[in-house]
Amino acid sequence: MRAFSILFFLLSFSLTYAQANKDADVKAINKVLKQQRIAWSNNDIEGYMEGYWKDDALAFYGNKGVTYGWENTLDHYLTYYPTAAYTGKLSFKINAVNNIAPDAYYVLGEYHIKRDIGNADGIFMLVFKKINGEWKIIADTSV
Image (cartoon, rainbow, N blue to C red; front, side, top):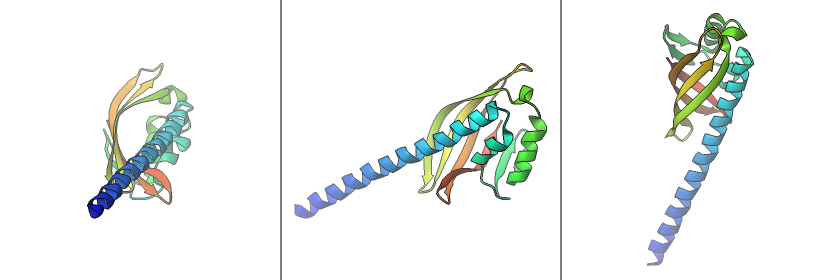
């Protein structure tokens, strides 16, 4: 009976710790998304890109196909969103944040860009990975 009580205690502690960890991770990921939203809405594409992994392995999938690498993704954004009239004001609707590995989550959501030249709306799936203590987007599918 004592062994059962110890096992039950350890299992309960484990689940509570895991939930607390997940809550902290989701909060940190949402903070990255908030910083991106603010940067985008200020026409600060470089600031927006701070949420992405600065690596050649970064993958961005969009309507024009796949773009690999942080610099190439930055160039993509600067080409298609050259001025504040194009970046507009960004908002997100986050539909799910799910853990896929101890240091990785996927985020499903919708984006809405309000702008004078015509609004833009779409959906996205982001893969976040904790790299050197920071949550970074390592893959982005936005359409």
